[in-house]
Amino acid sequence: MAYNPDSTILYKDRIVANILLILTTLLWGTSFIIAKNITQEVLLFLYLGIRYSIAIIGFIPYFILINKMNKKILLFGTSTGLMYYVAVLNLLRSKDKDLPFRILLSIFILCYLNQSCC
Figure 1: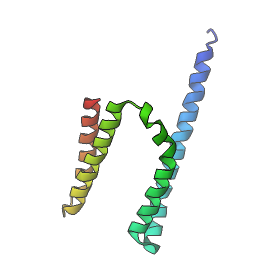
Figure 2 (figure 1 turned 60 degrees about the vertical axis):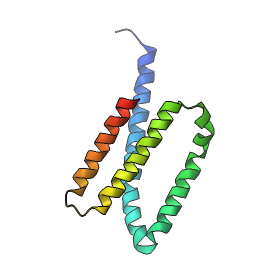
Figure 3 (figure 1 turned 120 degrees about the horizontal axis):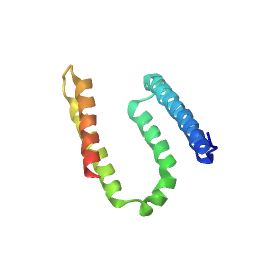
Figure 4 (figure 1 turned 90 degrees about the horizontal axis):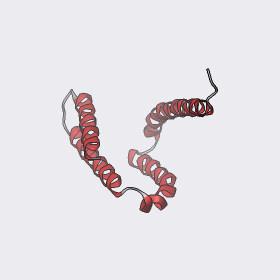
């Protein structure tokens, strides 16, 4: 078998990608536990305001690059986010017991709409 230098690069990229996925899973899982504990001590809207303020600060470098982004992808991403927000807001107002199923269904529908548009 001949030596292929590209295969080692792809292997290293795959390892880095797997490590980043594990790190994301750990952060996402622990953020749920932290959020549950914090909302018992702090008002919910104060917590959400601080959380989203930190997120906006983290995205400031990407706001600079927004002029270089594909406008079509930016438009469909924003519209999908707004549709998801409205869908979840309406679902949370309902008193159904099958709410988790309806939320997951709306996520799949929005993902399908987003893929078919771009």
